[in-house]
Length: 632
Image 1 (cartoon, rainbow, N blue to C red):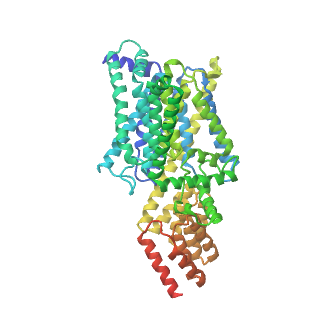
Image 2: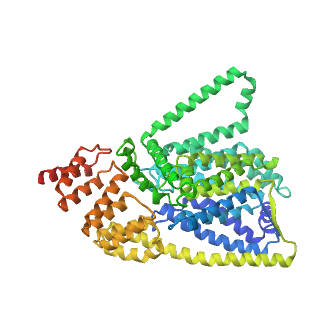
Image 3: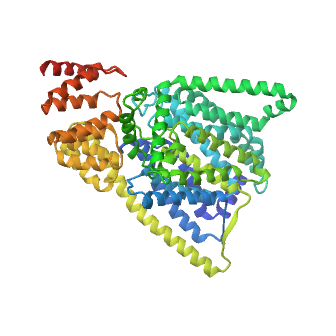
């Protein structure tokens, strides 16, 4: 036991100073704990509470990094090409968002990007000896989520969504499955290459530490194995085809890298047999993809339609896009225009309110343009071209296949909206850059006076950032809680109380489309229609949905501005032509404004309209339409 203590003392205290130890410990804590944060009292708690906790953690990490910087003796900075490519990409996103675009709104995603950048820098400073332990912590985090998901399926833990039994600590099964799909190749890779990993760790331990070596051997065998088994048991129940593809593809590549079965087989076969195998494999893959497509055909068609409409945004804004995290501000307007130009097609049956493109690469081009996409391609090129020394070869495989799994999932979902998945991505990228054997030394300070001046400058900058961040996050935390309190008051019918609370949170969220949508809807319900119009028009700059348009139509109707009300209802109907409610509101508008012919025409349209999903509400609307025809 004394030898074990001596080892940890050598690694964490004597070599790295106490501040570096605390820094490493807190980063490890964030990796393990963050995915499971789900604190009530916030709007969308599975997203917002994770963001708030992560923000506070980043502030603490910055404080510790400042203390560590002061005591550090390091006088040079070396960067890989990946470091520089990622830095340029983040700078471009920032410039594009704030300088090249005419409008930008409140964005949790952008603040997460800044926090993750801080985390990336800190992980880059880690000793290579700690890299494998970071991967082990990611696997442990995945095991906790997999166990939690199984408990939800068995009914022991509540779900976060009324429509699904399985969500983990996320808001629906999609992000949950995506997180597990990101963890799985890491678990499988560590398990497959456990011998070389254990050998590296034990060989880099100073002195003989039999107990430590023994524990290391079993930890790196059974923890990854537990991760593989637990994820395999729960992932099918999530019914996420994107996660299945990510896990299947990454598993095949890892198994081939380990055992080389296909390579050895092809060496023994002649060209005819090789051709037959390739053709059969392509047929199997095609049939499998066809089956996956038809497993949830409506969902598949919906995503294809979103991609089609997204190309129209790209055509209009090719160079710089619409700005980071601005997809949701523009997409629904383009969807409405799409249906106006083409009338109601089969696509109308799969259209819905969409906040994401369900393809991160498509959404990236929409938001950041072709310029941003070129920078992204360059970054991806550097990731897969990084050369590491021989002893890190297997680790490099694991990291690249982990990134591949996230990339595959990104083609069909929205992992860049999910903080825990982005956390894994940043860990993998930081490790990949650390393994680069061709780093460039960009700064080397020899004189102690210059080194002291540099440390003073950097420390002062960090302290200023910390001071500003603490004040801002504290204020943001309170405002989020006020927003949730207002939502609860609204649900209970206390509209006056809700509006008072919304008013207090308004200064912080005046550029947040979702907040303005909730606030404007409450104002409309409480008949403060002039203010509702003002708030909802502001909301449309940052987010647009049928909810905003119908609420705006209601407010205009109460103000007897019937033409504007008609325009808003029509826009809502054009956004999702399969919906009955906007058409119903139009019919009621025509009835109350005395436009009898329009009311009858709209009533007939509703009565003859194909029902996508039967419901009591649709039956009641149709009955009202019959009464309108009879009454007029």
